[in-house]
Length: 323
Image 1 (tube, rainbow, N blue to C red):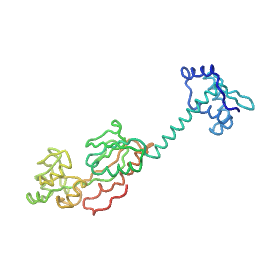
Image 2 (tube, helix red, strand yellow; image 1 turned 90 degrees about the vertical axis):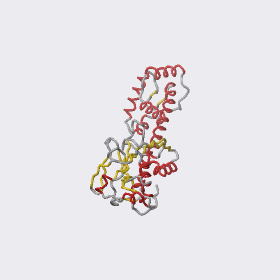
Image 3 (tube, rainbow, N blue to C red; image 1 turned 30 degrees about the vertical axis):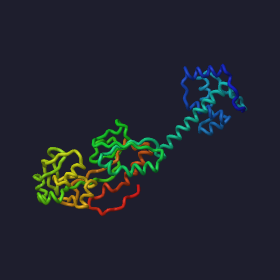
Image 4 (tube, rainbow, N blue to C red; image 1 turned 60 degrees about the vertical axis):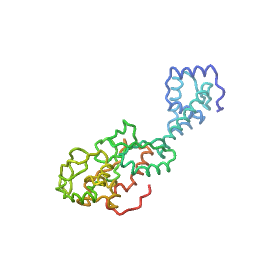
């Protein structure tokens, strides 16, 4: 079969009008036609596409009927592309190339992190522990970008266009996928100066002790004893609570990731028992496990290697694990 020649101008014009104004053609049929011309044979095209020769013949005939243009001249021995068919082949080949490129790009995105990843995290966790994860993620994946949103509130992933959120505490949205990263232990702490002045309370005395809380009245539990406290200082930030405890204002209940250094260097003492006052689960949550983008999968894997925030308060120092 000869290579497609110069198309007839009148036929080409008529074809473009029909394509642009009146006919909706399946891209699959366009790619099928391109395969027939490229292979110069119904039989070879059928073998390549995994369908029967009869199916191809019927679909090409239907395509010509819908276009109202003869694309191929058929004989028992050969195929010949008409002038209109040559023009149509050029367009179909270009479309097929674009489809292949789009498919390859999407598959590449699934294999390697590409594009913007939007991550939400509580402020304390984000400020203290996200930087090494993000920096190594970006170093390993040069086509990736990251936007970190720090917020001490319940975020809505889909509505806010987020890919991943780090959540501390109980989960309440069963529609999200959650991967547990660990648990954050909380401890009751006070400064040596405070304890020297007011004494070390027992668990049952916590109710009347000077406390740093997060609401006007809240319930704390120590060694199985529940106490409704009336804070001498109410704050809305864990770091402020920890700093106030170091300054001798009162007893605070704060996470180990926040008070560990102050406990180790003697600025704070753990009250009651080395056992955590409570444990709060840390999860990475994302909208769906189905066709999970590579940028989400790789980032969550990196988060899962971050062990230090989940270490008990009294663990011996250990070298950070490589991300």
